[in-house]
Amino acid sequence: MRIRRASLGDMPGIMRIEDLCFGRRRFSPQLVQSMLLRDDCLVLVTVDAEVVVGAAMCTFSRFQETGRIASIAVLAEHRGRGIGRSLLKASESELRDRGASRFTLEVSVDNAAAIDMYRSNGYSVGSIIADYYEKGESALYMEKDLTMRGKRTSVKVS
Ligand SMILES: CC(C)(COP(=O)(O)OP(=O)(O)OC[C@H]1O[C@@H](n2cnc3c(N)ncnc32)[C@H](O)[C@@H]1OP(=O)(O)O)[C@@H](O)C(=O)NCCC(=O)NCCS
Image (cartoon, rainbow, N blue to C red; front, side, top):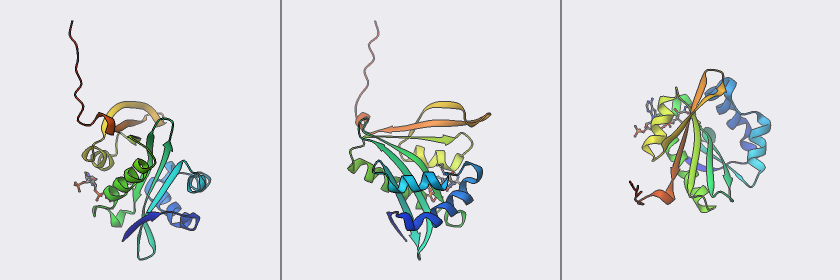
């Protein structure tokens, strides 16, 4: 099992994961293809015996020094073995190499497993975005700011 950068040849494997893991919320093939080609995007896959079993898709803003975790998904039969966490860590590491000091993401308020994964990797909830996916389907906006690590916030009370 290994993590590597994805190429266009991984499209079928990535789209299979998108279909099985996200259903109607999946990314379109056009979007995935553009993420594979663009310099400001990062797509990583976890491959087990030549089969794509997990994928992470991210975008990067050099200006804001921010990486956005757009999607992380693992095939159901491979979950619970640390693949999601290692894809998250590898994505952060690649984005840090490009200059990111802050990571953001949106995740469905109902997605307990993913929220737990992000929280236990240092993400905190910034806000709730009502109707983010559709009416009645809200998301948590989560972020992890490396520049804030170890800094004390002082609040003046007058
Ligand atoms: C979220 C997801 C990527 C996690 O992948 P995974 O390979 O099973 O995760 P890992 O085995 O690396 O576990 C990482 C952490 O996730 C959390 N987690 C994973 N499965 C969980 C579950 N069933 N219930 C609660 N927390 C869970 C835990 O915090 C876990 O850490 P721990 O093992 O120390 O407790 C996977 O469930 C998935 O693909 N879900 C569908 C797609 C999706 O919703 N993606 C997230 C939105 S972009």
